[in-house]
Length: 264
Image (cartoon, rainbow, N blue to C red; front, side, top):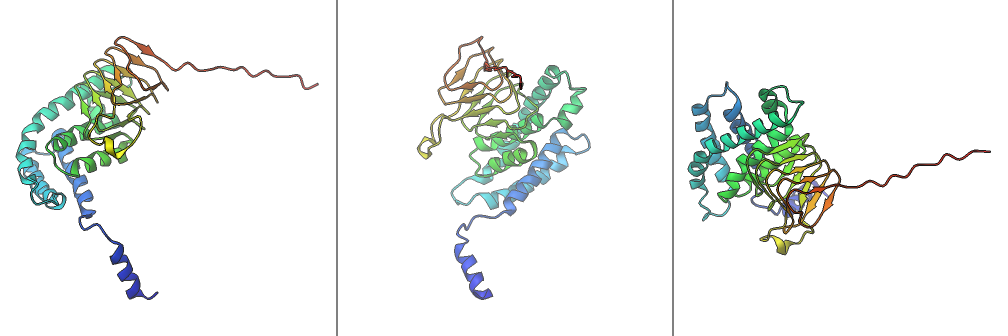
């Protein structure tokens, strides 16, 4: 096959007219600037807010494929929510520094904790998701996922003072609801019982009530599953039905002691 034929074949199979990977790169730049504007003391707010608006206009151009989508109106609504988002993130950071004996300072939490970074990008993406802005919120949380190992769908609803410790391997699905003062550890999954396209508009992921702690590698599945307030879910637990308030659930290991036989 000659070069011209190869080119024609490649063009023939490039079937997605709206697939511009520049959008992904631009979203990452937008996310970085937004994060720095909120937390870095050397990043001026007014100047960068203007730059963010300009970058957002480009995201609108790249992401709003349907002309009737009122994406241009989103920025003003989103900008008005940023102070509240920052307030929530400060509560998250305070929850981490107050709960984790390994944290040496609040500055360490902001700069070095992957769980905090994942929560920050989730909260910034979630408000765009709520505005109905296409694609960009998911690209934001996937950017954080790639850096931290934490996969939070921007559609999840998460309350105040949320703490993810160690972070790596955490998965929180689109319709999960997490209320206030919840702490989870690495490897926790808040997922669906099974995957089917016809469940797109149904609640598929669990609800976690106030003051719950979920230890490493626990798996909690199902849209009807509710973990009652003040409960503790032990490591490696597998839960597919609701747990009443003030419960402790743990995975009981089976221990078998190997008998050493005499070789004679």
